[in-house]
Image (cartoon, rainbow, N blue to C red; front, side, top):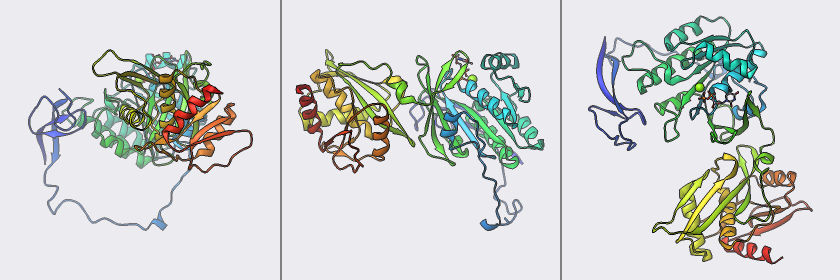
Length: 455
Ligand code: TYD
Ligand code: MG
């Protein structure tokens, strides 16, 4: 027997309340709590339901683990070599970032390899999709399109397919199950529709790709459980003002985390960028203070990015800290260390920090490069044009080791950098034509910047 019960669910974090309130106590968001009907089968605990499970031995389990390459190299790198049959991938991103464009290009590529592809859009009409496909040059007539939102119809269709297929759902927030009372986009609908589609995909070995919207905080809209239910979670990031887009793996059951792929949005779709460091550094200017180069690592890929800092006298009681692409609490920590250990006074200064090219950095290894940019700006001393930095800064001002220094140095050397500023404790295989500055505490960096200017 199905018993219907009213619930109030926060659309931001999925927390459940028995009555309506204006502000969610869990995630502190206002006006996110919506009434939803929750249909739960009663009597689940009664003895008459359910049956004994037949367990299996792993030696008796066979699996097909061939990855299907899309031949979009940047995408293949992010998903760990290709799509695994029966896997579910969730791609989240801001509106207009290019999710639908990317997915249409993916089905175009997969269809060229004779994979059966189905593209279901709940957001666009077929004529809109055709316009986009013409623009992208995706003209493979084998791809099947539908503009529907009923998830249970889609699941039934997939179950009746004889052959493994690739199914794209654009987007999971538009899908609904008619059995549930709540409207599409609510937590229960998103969760239930995803569950239905995932079950069908696992049963038929279908490669399921779900597009997800982002909330204003940057998380995938709907319940967090959605991210647990799928095998791979990718974020498509970038600034709408830049043409560069970064696809980042956030969770991947078949490959490395935090792997990135870089694309450029052109008038005829997304183009891969095979050497992103060169692109990120292409607009650099000589003899400007406040910029440094960070030799970073995104997943397994080394990448060089320019860090720009501007430190000016503040007229405000609380000086401004404006950051694009880095973590604000990390900057506060770094400023405190610079203040306490190096006597660089920042408490009455506004600090503006920008990671050029619209990329976001998460690595603690960027600390040293950020510190170098800030010191260079405060002292108005340009840093050497061919030097790169990497190292984590601790609270006592010590510079700590980071992982994979060789990869970072190789990338720097490939792009013509020959001064490497790195932690003292870092063990590296030193090549002859590179100059290494080993820094053990942050004040060594201040000294180095002063000295470089005198040379
Ligand atoms: P879209 O894929 O619709 O974004 P999403 O599905 O993430 O909302 O992309 C829309 C943006 O991309 C839009 O601003 C126009 C731009 N665009 C191009 O620059 N070139 C193209 O070839 C296409 C199809 C879109
Ligand atoms: Mg779209």
